[in-house]
Length: 118
Figure 1 (tube, rainbow, N blue to C red):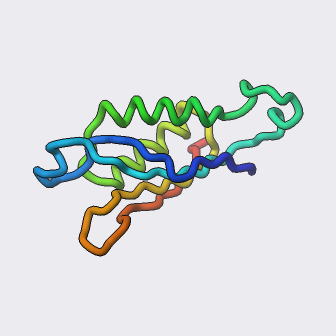
Figure 2: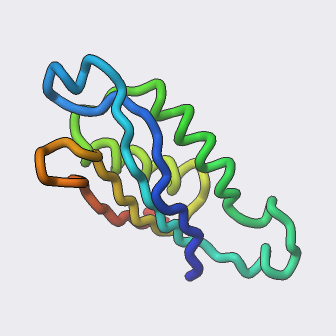
């Protein structure tokens, strides 16, 4: 299996359970590892034969800008499901972090891995 990766992608979304978090969007940092075969794209040199990371970033920016999540775990699961179902990934690792949420802590977050059912 090959991996397409997107690292340290920052996006604004509504995330959190506390009133101060619900008052305005927050920036989260997302890193993705997307398992897929790049054999066909490697031979054809055609973007249509792979997962286009620019399309992934645009889609996540749009989708996450329109939604609210209480927990990072739900946000990570949403991203993983989108990659598996809409982009045809066979496996994903999703890392999502809130930035500067607590004094003396640079980042807090979750890392999840999911595989396709098929």
